Image 1 (cartoon, rainbow, N blue to C red):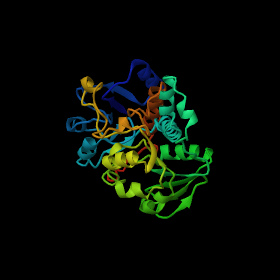
Image 2 (image 1 turned 90 degrees about the horizontal axis):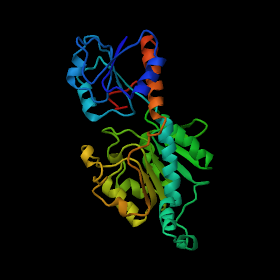
Image 3 (image 1 turned 180 degrees about the vertical axis):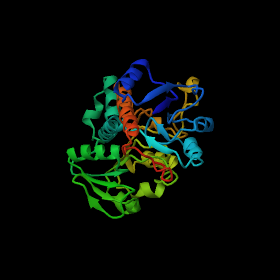
Image 4 (image 1 turned 120 degrees about the vertical axis):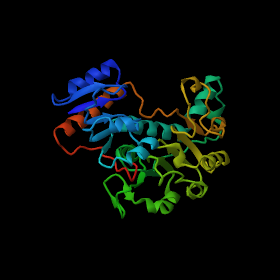
Length: 324
């Protein structure tokens, strides 16, 4: 089975991948396509039409991260015979960041840190804005690989856990969370002291949480978003935080991103001044970034490619209609 990596990894990561591949798997490296193009599998999250038509043997496209970019999703609608896969190597790192954001936001770690850096102990002697999570309820939107890890962490903190998942039609339990279909959201939100968003962005989830939905949350709830920014209405989130209806938020995903390398040092993440709010922890969409992420990506990619070469049923297949 011939696999084309459109964007080759670093040399050490590539060596790690090659060491884990079955002998039946051969690699070619981009960004240029091989001539003639005979690859069976294309690993790329930014494939263009020419990449999908160049090889008559292409049967699988692998996006080497979680989520499908909208341009690729639209393009693949013209290629229904191609199987599409995601990699979920980042489940553990992203879940860990979700927990970090939850605790940092709920406990106001950042403003307390900033005060003490200026030798100001005043917050210690004032009423604390920090919230207690023990015996409270966490609601996790998106109970996949990341959401399930977050659920276990919340349960370990002494929280009751509710979750939504697309693939079920009625409520049930799995030993950690009480799982509901997405249609139950209006009933679940008033119970959620912590709302943790682990959803992909699709036409169904974009704008899922607006002013009306945020108003259903109990006063003093904490929101964490490690899914995609536009799942939550930008203006509604800012005003709920500024007004204090939301106690705090931890945000790793945003509404505006740098257009290029030259913009990385001066691009606001939103058209609203979230950076001026003390009750927001800001993170630059780095949930999956750790010093081991590259190794994890190669291990998961090798498992997927080896499984495909052996004709096995492998995890990570994407339902293009659903978007994940």
